[in-house]
Image (cartoon, rainbow, N blue to C red; front, side, top):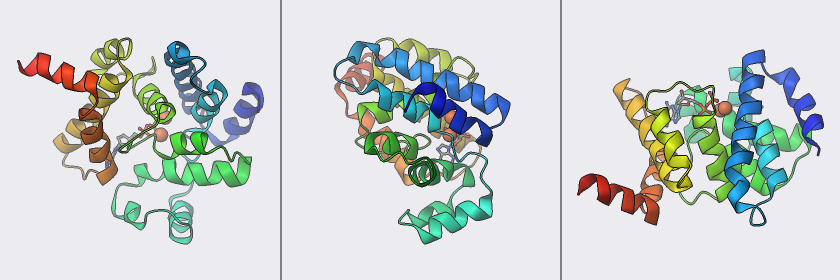
Length: 199
Ligand code: DGI
Ligand code: FE
Ligand code: FE
């Protein structure tokens, strides 16, 4: 599927600012993918970026029904509904758009929480969603700088910042959010970064 065709399919499902965010995420992911050209399917990255927030504005009752009636983890229902649009999005992108590529669906599915053992494509979408130029999170600049050197360190920081942010607001943390953080902590660049900081 070509970029413009994909954008035309997603646009009616998103508000203007979300559509613009979608384009920035896609372009950030393609930029971060450049050093891996040849090892990565850039069309998969592009499609995952374009469709990552496909289900963002779906009706909550409808999303709940999708989770109940499909093979998705039921514990999602015990957590904030903000976490539903990734897994439900992957399902709907497959059914409604007809994209069956597992690497695309996986990156969409895990883009909010992350998970242990993310693929490089999963990581690039997860990270680009966090650092795209429109994001103003506190600490985002440090993550942008890290991304230029190590995708793993930058993903680890994004997941650390999200956990800190949520805990400071007394929110529950979905297990896969912690799994992403712990798993990334074992990557060699992250081990090195932590050793430098902790002395
Ligand atoms: O859809 P976007 O706004 O582009 O970004 P996103 O898919 O990363 O969703 C962002 C929200 O999800 C953000 O407010 C943080 C929240 N989030 C991520 N992990 C967790 C979480 N919220 C809860 N309650 N628990 C989590 O584990
Ligand atoms: Fe999202
Ligand atoms: Fe997003």
